[in-house]
Image 1: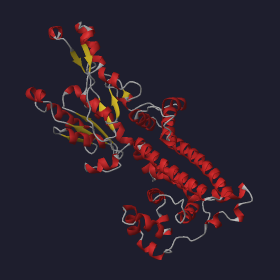
Image 2 (image 1 turned 30 degrees about the horizontal axis):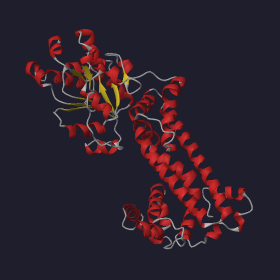
Image 3 (image 1 turned 135 degrees about the vertical axis):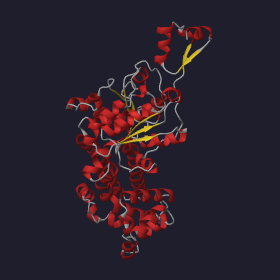
Image 4 (image 1 turned 30 degrees about the vertical axis):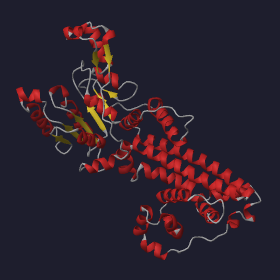
Length: 459
């Protein structure tokens, strides 16, 4: 090593740990060392772990962990297998994938003896239903597909001096939650909350110790809360760079450390508060519309409602994947719902239902004026509404058919509810906009507020 580095004009390493190793151990001149971080695939990020699991033949809600790469004894896979004996007691359907075949150099002098030892451990530990070998060499696309399906990647290696790991790099690049022993590369790459380090061969620490309230707030909820607010507020001016992987790991750790119920409640409380803030904005805008009675003000209110709904839907698309592990461990089996359903229900109850009839009445008025919203805006609104409250497509059949005919949203709704649509009124409400802005709505803001706050109003 010393002679190779001495005769080289430039030495390239894949990590800062490797650079320091050359300097401290081999006396290489630091000026000739360049660090080029280990590459990762430029693969498309998938928001749906459930779809990825199903595509590989697994159930969509099964919790999945994996270790991948060429197999040899330094992989130390017997360590997580021991921990799995405890894990399956609380998560009976958990699946641990061991992906890869025996390293070719290892194959030369000991064949598949390490794999056979692991298979014997799996049988002895009663894990035959919870551990699966994917015993083959995978090309990049196939490995990326498996990475997209797992919730957690384990790198339980037992060599402290390992200064680089392609498997760990790929896992971090894919935004996975990573649990690792503290070998050199892991301590560098998983720094600043990007993953979890557990002592070598310590199964108790691998299982995590329960949070205290103060630890949950400081280590988990406070940073999670800040990230979620950025999604919800959708403000470019106040945006701070965030790490998907770091937030996913904080959520995963909260679940493992006994705070899944608290985390779910905190999430719903935050979103509820946000929805009421949006409702106050709409209340104020509606009062101005009632006072002004102009088509311009009506159009502004219509656009504001559409934009807020669109922003919220986009925020949910970013938030839901972060809570996948909470979903499969707690929300779906215990609450009999999903994080996405619960967050959409909050918006439906607080925002959509109080204003929906007003919005349809305004739209029926505006489409016959010079302030008519664009077809694209109307199409966007109807798609968003049908996503949150599909029953509105039945009540407003003609309106949805006019702007969504031939689209998937209309076809799906009408095919599922053909009988209901047939029996429903075949015309949209012809109620004039003056009824919305009539004399009973004029005398005080209190009257307007009461109208808007009632989730079952017919006004």
